[in-house]
Every structure is written in structure tokens, then in C-alpha cells.
Image 1 (tube, rainbow, N blue to C red):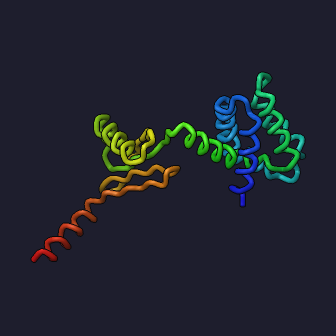
Image 2: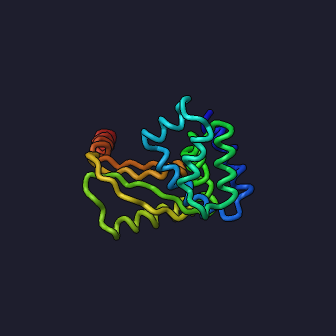
Length: 175
């Protein structure tokens, strides 16, 4: 339900915004701030008035904020939807990635890949998807490699145990 509401607000903002990438940069920062426990509790608290909640968010924007963003925050405050800022930002980021055809993905493995291997993997994914993908690395205890690009719905796993099992099955079938 939250995602559907966020999509409506995101499409409304993108239809009136003149400089959406700049607004999106500001919203990303505001979204990070609203994800903290203290701010979340303040935004969802019935004790704090909607005006105070709106003022709290607007004070983080500064004096030179885009007028459409300020009006957008005010509308969110009036409709008691300030807690949706992270979801709206996520939808807008996803839309922006789709428009620019540039996505971000994650490589998870026990040992980090060197820069050359990471670039080869990015190029292979580009050939497969037709989109530019920037991969970042995360260290895990996974015995293999996992590549995921959530916005494209791509997840590839290479597990040593799985390869070993498939090799044993292949040998058994060939005998």
C-alpha cells in the first residue's frame, strides 16, 4: 500500500519539477535523515503537530531550496505523509535509473574481486542487459559469488558447493 501511494506522489513531483535530478539529490539526503530512529518517531508521533513536522523537514532544506520541492513537502505534511519520503525517494531513484539506463548492483563474495574482474563483470552484464551497471563489492561468508541488480531483477549465484554437486551429477549420468 505504501509503495502505491509513494508512486502517486513521485509521479506528481516528477511532473511539476523542472530540475528533477537536483531535487532528487536533496531528497536522497532528506530520506537518509528521516530513516533515523529519532526522526521516524517524531514523524509518526501523534503528539507532534503536522506543522511542526513539516517545519522540521523544511528546515533541513535551507533557504535556497527549489520551490516545487518546498511545496511538495508542505503537501506531504498537510496529508500526513511525511513518513513516506524514503519510499517516494526510492521510486524516484528507480525511475531516474530507468530513464538514464544506468543501474547499481552488488557483488557479494568472501574475497574481493580485483578491478579488472569487476570491470569484466560489468561489461558482461552490459552486453546481457543493454544497460550500464556499476557494481560495488560487499564481503560476506558466501563460498562463491553472488551478483544482484535489484532494479533490473537480476540475481546470479555461483556457489562452489553447487558446482561440485552438478559436476558429480554429470559424472554419475555419464557412467
